[in-house]
Image 1 (cartoon, helix red, strand yellow):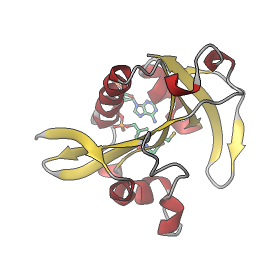
Image 2 (cartoon, rainbow, N blue to C red):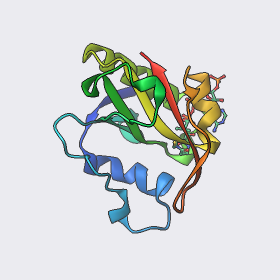
Image 3 (cartoon, rainbow, N blue to C red):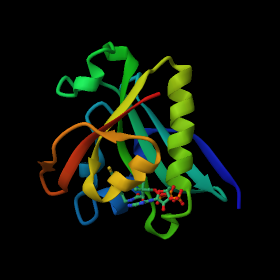
Length: 152
Ligand SMILES: CC(C)(COP(=O)(O)OP(=O)(O)OC[C@H]1O[C@@H](n2cnc3c(N)ncnc32)[C@H](O)[C@@H]1OP(=O)(O)O)[C@@H](O)C(=O)NCCC(=O)NCCS
């Protein structure tokens, strides 16, 4: 098995975003605001040349997170659209994607990564060193989320 993680376009994430994060919904729901900004980047994890995992990183600061207040806007990135195809989950792909992203972000002098985590994924992110920094809140259709963060 060969694993390659590389930068991909927003559209290239859709074959993973759609079944994992937007199942049963129109493909247009896979679009995220900011997907095509020059400061945004998308990673794809290819196993034997097949795309199996994706994640998107946007330069964005959330004013409601106390822990981010010491950083300026450019020092903060938001993770969105973290997804691994169902048949490949639990095989360390997500972990490798996050590790790769953290190195990329550090090289860009980014100091903090944050995101809205689905309740079901919180333990995964805690294993990766992220901490909950909000009360639970609801996101329409998707369910309960927590804001999480890590200083890189
Ligand atoms: C959450 C997700 C990205 C994790 O990726 P993955 O490739 O399945 O996870 P990994 O195999 O890299 O797991 C790394 C570690 O976290 C653990 N883990 C993974 N998913 C977990 C979960 N949902 N709950 C608890 N632990 C989890 C693994 O057991 C592993 O532990 P170990 O290092 O002790 O062996 C993936 O399962 C997924 O796409 N889930 C559905 C979509 C989703 O919830 N995305 C996040 C939206 S915020």
